[in-house]
Structure formats: C-alpha cells, structure tokens
Image 1 (cartoon, rainbow, N blue to C red):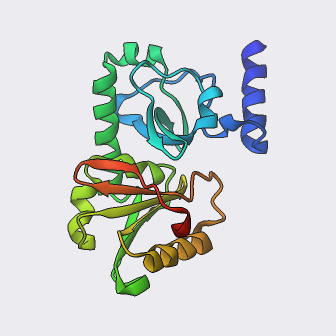
Image 2: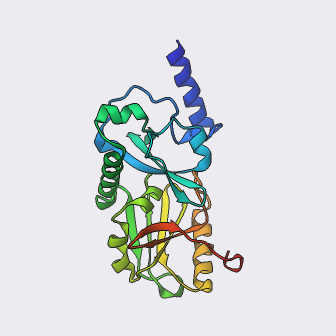
Length: 219
C-alpha cells in the first residue's frame, strides 16, 4: 500500500504542478536502467532541493541559476540518475557524463530533437532553433554543438537562449540593437513554454558555453 500511495502522490504532483519535482521524479520507479537512456538535463536551482540526490561529480552549474543534472528517459518522462544507478551501470561519474553527452548527440543528429536553421532573421543574420523534445534546452550542453553550428551560422561566437526546456535558439553575437531585436522575437515566440528556464543568454565558443553578463543598458 505504501508504494501505491507514493505513486498516487507523484501522479498528483505531475498533473497539478504543485511541487518543483514535476520534471524529475524524486522517488525513482522500478525500471531497468539503460546506459543508452541517460541524458544531461537543465534545471533551475530550485529543483535541486526537490530531486533525488545525484552522484558526486554529476551536478554542474550552467549559469543564470541553472544546473545540469543527469536523468534517465522513461519514454517521455525523466527521473534523476541516483548514486545506485551508476553502480548498476558500472560507470564512473565521468563515464556517465560522457555517455549522456553521446546520447544527447544522437538525439540531435537523428532529429529527434528537431533543429532548423533560418537563413535570415533580424538584421538579415541567420539563427537556429532546436525544439519539439524535452531535451531541446539540454542541447545547449552538447559538446558537438559549436562544431555543428559555428560554420552554419557564420560566426565564431554564438549566443544561446534557452527560455524553456523545449526550446533553444542560437544566433550571432551582435550589437545592442540586434540583441534587443532577438530578445523581443524570442519573448514573443517562446513566452508560453511550460517549463521556463531563463531569459538570460549564454555565450558559446570553441571553448564551451558560459553565461553572458550584460550591462543594464543591454537588458
């Protein structure tokens, strides 16, 4: 009966959104864990206090009060990877992170996470949109992202926006007018996302992704 009651409470939370754990089950159901179904997942810092404990060396800060955790895909829902999972899989934290990154790359390369390059946006500059999947925002953490898009977008420095978990937009670094035009467009198109993350930007270069810090006049 205790297990059944716990399942009912989790389902109620998922339907009503009454707790921060709507995206990550805090008490993992009994499933067969597979190394091919672990992925990075971007969450607000508030989720860390509600989710199940991650193994040491797994949780990483992304910036703008967001963190990267590892999750197991449950056919469209996800739950945290917990310490016992790594024991079951026989993976070290670094091996688990590498496997999750490779799995994410597969989602992107197979268009399970859909991506589209728009050749002309504000100021005639191209941009890219990733969406249609719960891992779309997490694609910002993929190690192959810069190599895949820097040439396609014609820029060595890219700006990344992840307004909610099912959207990631990438575009040129530009002047204040261009950044503001992109911000206006993104807010207009993506304000209805169900799992909001941040309106702040990240900078993507060959060295990786980091939070962009703007002056007040650019916000």
